[in-house]
Image (cartoon, rainbow, N blue to C red):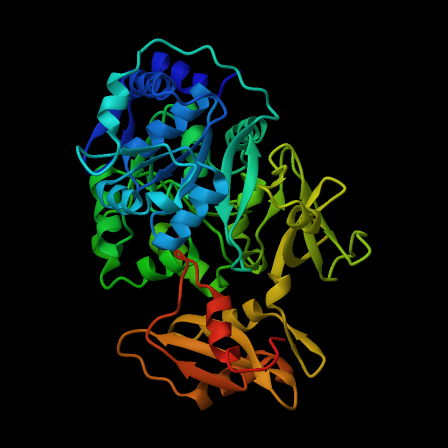
Length: 513
């Protein structure tokens, strides 16, 4: 069955319910069904064929949702590009993906037009305005018809090229099939956390070209509303929750940290919220506890990656309320169709308490990286995707991520996991954000460096930080030095990028490890 039929069926059940809302327009299910049919057939009438690679490049807005559904209906390949990428990175993605068309805003359309000579595959720049590209989006809609298309792509046919740099900094695209995206919808419908329905409003804060967008189709399948927020702003989000009666959120830890530290956060009415999901990076238990105080007992965590298409583990709302609080350091347990293992170097399952790498297999796992067979071979084994995340697992199946395999610090022969040290730093009331990295050291090979952002008006010195960590960690794990800065580097999705912090300390070193 074509994924687009999920919207068609929802439009019959909930035609006047709002399906997608942004700051410009509010679109009902009936309207979204008609517009996506028109866009799908309009793209075909423009000369694009089923299987064509079409990019979307814009901040969160209704047309991005329309495009995703239309691509499914026309059996085209979606190439989502984060609008926060640099111009050079955008050109690189368009060329690497061999995109023949791009749907984008006026400014980007003009920039791409000026770079046309560097874009040999690109035939159409479809602009979300009246000028700046080859053809306005509105005209493509006008070229189409409202009748349903009969396209029915095979499950193993490519549906999405999901670009992700991960922790390596190397731009690569996970190949996700129509079958993978169907598995995403199935898993979302049976998730052990509170499910969505026609009375739900989910605020998409992060770019829907990436993690947040994975929930678009599952929400459309059950008649819920996708509320798109163009940019992250603390008070804007809090006001939006209050005014739009938002029921669901997905946040990265950096966003949670900012929200719960908003001065006078209690003045906003957040009572409509029923579920606050967080993920994409570990979150310190002290921050989780504070978030429960602000939002209520409605927190849940999800763990997954672009390569897995959907979440592979979930820490439920009830898990967050276990009395001893131990589970707050866990990312939960795998569920439904996913097979998750934690293995040693011999690919054998580890024993509880041992550290190994998380590997996952299932209908939602990518087929490999686009045009990168060697890179694919590095991360796929016996059908399992090797996540690069180190973890322990207990007798009940709860997974506790220790750190990224490539970010582990080796100092004096000891393995140190930055996340463990960062969680101690976050328990200091003066600390707003922190990153822990290994820096060059003649004696130890690497020494532990804490890079800290303090809360406004807070005061703390290096000796206090080191002493505090020494009280809560083994001696070899505590930082040897501390730098205080105004802001930590983040990727376009709001995650702190340790690699960029670390690179600054190694750029003049003859070795990199």
